[in-house]
View 1 (cartoon, helix red, strand yellow):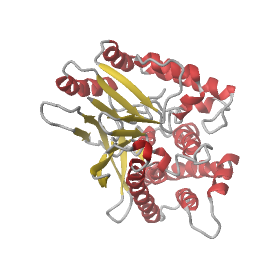
View 2 (cartoon, one colour):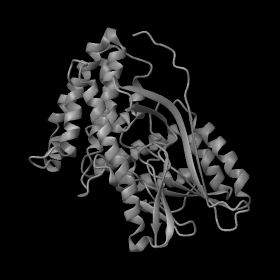
View 3 (cartoon, helix red, strand yellow):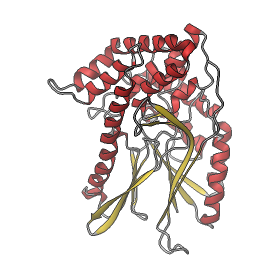
View 4 (cartoon, helix red, strand yellow):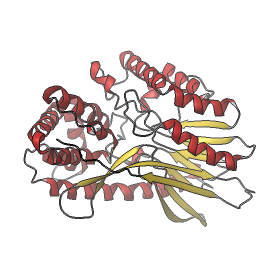
Length: 399
C-alpha cells in the first residue's frame, strides 16, 4: 500500500497545538489494520520540515532567500540539526516502524524544505533520523509510483508566490522571515503585547491571508490596536525597502497591467494602512487570488498526466495549500483521472471569504492522508482519502 501525507512543517521553536506523536499513533493504528504483513510505502509530499519560517534566521545575517553559499549551507545544517533534536521523540516513533520493516519512506521536497538540496550533510541527517537509505543524495522534487498510477509533487511550482521559473528565490521566502517570523517578535519586543495566539500567524493559510489576519488581530484587540497596526506597517515598509524584494517586484511586474505582483503589493500596502476601513477590499482581493490558485492546481495536474513521461498514471497528488481536496479531471487516454491535495497535519487558520463584512478566521486542527491499494485488495479498494478537522471552544482573552 502507498500512503501520502504532506506539510507537517516541523521546525525549531514551533508552538504546535497538536501532538505529532499522538497524531502518528492514531494514523498508524489505522494503517496497521490494513497493512497486514506488507511494508507500507509512505511518501512525504513536501514541507515535512520548515526551513523558511524558523526564528533562528533572525539571529544571523543569512536569510533563506539568499543565494546558495557555504555560509547559507552551514545555517541550513544548524537549523536542521536543531529541528531534528526538537522533534527527536516523534522522529524516533517513525524510524522505529522503518527499522521494523513495516514502513518505507520516500521524501519529496517542497518550497519550505527546498534548502535541503543545498546542504548535503543536512540531507544525510534527515535520512538518518527517519531511517532512510540514500545518505547525502539530493531529494527529488517529484515521485512516480507506477504500481498505483500515482504522480506526487508538492505543488508549489504552480504558485507564483512560492516558486520562480528562473530558479530564483520566491517572494514567499522573503515574506516568511521578514514579516511572518518578525511580526510576533517585534510586537513583543517593542510593545510588551503578548497575546496567547500571536504565534498562530504561522498557521494562517493561504499565506496571502496573513495581512488580513494581522488586521483582524488589531481589530479584536482594541486597547493595543494602534501598536499592532503600527508594528505591522513598519515591517511592511522595511519589507518594500529590501533590495531583493524590490528586485522581485520589478522582475515580476508587466507594465500597464494589474498583474499578480501588483496585486500582492496592493494587498500588503492596504494591510499597512492605519485605519481599518480597508478590510472589505482586502477580503475581496484575497478571494480573487485564491480562486485563481485553486483552478491552476487542477489544470496543472491534468497537464502533468498528459506528458509522455507520465503516460499510464491516473492520479496526481499535491500538498502545499494545507486544504485537502479531491477533483476528478476527466479522461486521459480513455481512463478516469483525479487530482488530490492531501492537506496538512497542522493547525489551520482559514479565512472566511463568502459572507460579506469584516474578515474572520476559523481555526481548526487538521489531519489528512491518502492511501492507494495494490491490485487484489480484499475489499476491492483502489484508494481511500481520509481527512479530519477538529475545533476547540475559544475562550475570550482580555486585550
